[in-house]
Length: 346
Ligand code: TRP
Image (cartoon, rainbow, N blue to C red; front, side, top):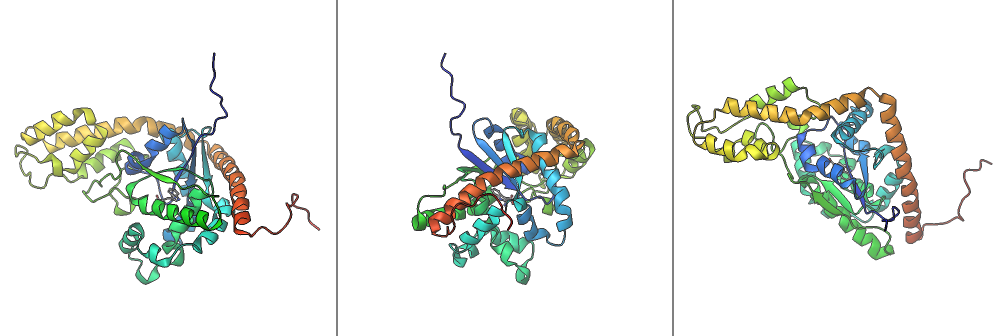
């Protein structure tokens, strides 16, 4: 019998999140689901981008460690397998910071200034004059997150595409100047690139206060669903509804696909009351979230295990990072000394 060699090179995938709070359903459909799926065939790395979290949470840096653990629990809860996927912490990989400095020389300010995601974020957060160099330049640091591992694929939500484009641009420029050292990555957007908020806002986001978190208890999920906006033109339950402009229907389309034709038909016919439609959605979401919550709770009791997983992942990421940085410096002509033997103190 012919066996497939286990040692074949699997392409590398990298993605991650800022540890600024728990992850929500938008994260799940936009990226988490893809990560779980990809870990079978790819070498998946997930970065907990705690340095990037400082761009918006400078004063709350004391909470980042706890949020790092929470985000890691969300990963494990949705099925990220720590034996197949490497989860690591950005601030503990100094090679990323080093690469960021080199990359910052390659990026024109005019390009950064046009990044639509940065513009929207700065505007929404009202940064104005408070805009920092670190915030404005975080796409450069994100390019280092991706390229220090030579990742080929980056599963992300739609808003991250400009950052991946920026990364590709940096890689092309680096390789043109210094030789083919870095890998040009591609974005992989999930089935639902952007989940709308429960309030009908363009996207679900913690900062808009319109999110259902993966760890929300059943009663809270129910309450949030019942507060969701529906078709504003529908005043009486017997009025014909307009599912195409209804937030609740948008969620049925994502999480309750098989009932969609029936819901759509009876809503349009004025035969389905919004309260019943919401009750259906909240049970559907709770059915979906139940095993995720159970797994999360089981892991949450094992604090030591979470830090072991992150520590081991970070060691693995650093081992690759130091190799890439040696190659980068070599290619740039910034390699000065003969290979050093491990730390000798005079
Ligand atoms: N900017 C991403 C977000 O806000 C998080 C992130 C940091 C990331 N580094 C990354 C995503 C590298 C993909 C790849 O969600």
